[in-house]
Amino acid sequence: MRPLRVLRAAGAAFVLLAAAACTDRSNPLGPDGKPKPPPDGTGAPPTTIAALDCVANKETLAVSCKPAQNQAGTAAGDIIVGNQNLYVRLVSSNIAYNGGTGQFTFDATLQNLIEQPLGTADGDNPDPGGIRIFFYEAPAVTGGTGTVAVVPDGFAFFTTAAQAYYTYPYMLDQNETSPTETWTFIVPPTVTDFHFSVLVSAPVEYPVGYITLDGQLPTYDFGPIHPTTPHPMTAVVKNALGEVVGGTVTFGTSDPTVGTVSPAGVMTGVRAGTCTITATSGAVTGEMTYLVTGMTRTWNGSASTDWATPGNWDLGVVPASVDSVTIPDVANDPVLAAATAIGGVTVADGATLNLGAFNLTMGANLVTGTTGGVIASGAGVLDLNGTGTAHGRVPSLWVTGTYALDGDLLVVAPQSIRAGRMNNPAYQLRIVAQ
Image (cartoon, rainbow, N blue to C red; front, top):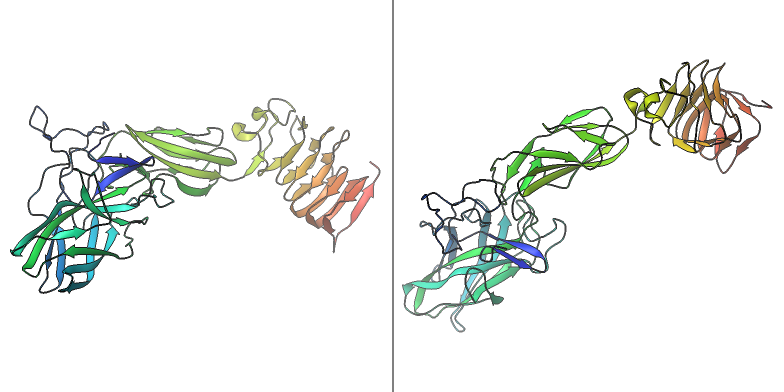
């Protein structure tokens, strides 16, 4: 843990955002006189930051904040940002002064201008500690005489002990602006102007930086992709502020049977399922999740008659339950060795799909030829469980879904419709003994 710049509370990493300069009072330069590299090993140059300098005028009821003219140092790779209108924007309104109580008040909003959300450790939920804007430099009188004091939400150690702060209990996405919070100062009548500097301390999900894939933050859901379809990804290594820092990226996949990824970052779907592609560069990571959809797979029977042997299928992949299959007329007809679920089935003339003693549950269209078909050689049953059309020759049949005939259907007895529906407005459904 880097105690001056990365504060941890309730397990969340806090990034010091917006305002001041270096919170590490040690020398930011190395023995060679150059800025020290960041501790994460990325080799990124240190980020020069400016204090968020604010000036208040009691007479004109004005408050304005801007980057400080004088830099207080460099971040030397630590997670600190600042600079009004670059990383954050602090805006005041409803400025008022009560001469009786000496209270100078205004409402202030905070806008997040960096890529990743502020005020959250997981990217989904506001952190219990919220975002805290704390006083890096206490109010100092610049016009008139007297002393100005802030009335804060609390005091805590940020860059030094007992620094006053205001809490913004929100999660702010990029470019999102917070609701207003009221700031209060005690200002005697003898003071006309005063100055203060603030920092923003906020938990972020990626305090050491991250990798975007196709411009998306980590954990992005790409959605469906077709098997065999390549998708080249663009990986960019960034620091916590979203600034590009560069670096060598290594890719990996959570399940190579579902999706593969090349060293260059080209993802290719293999079979139906979900997989996550990860990108790593030093201590920073990125990831993208893909839903590989079903496809029509073709039987070739080049190895045997076993349905479950990958070498019997084109592309060397056994069909998944959301895939459909085509069985052409080849030397080896497929035989089930276990109960199987599939999408649609097309069996060519002269070909046979042998169920044996096992059930085949279908979720899509059924098409067989006139001289071949789905033939049960034992106790196996064909279960039309989804929604689709059917025609051809089939074995013992259950209909538990909703199907319509798009041609004549010849069924080997017994045939049963179990809580399903078979519509045959223009075609014949015939039941035969065998």
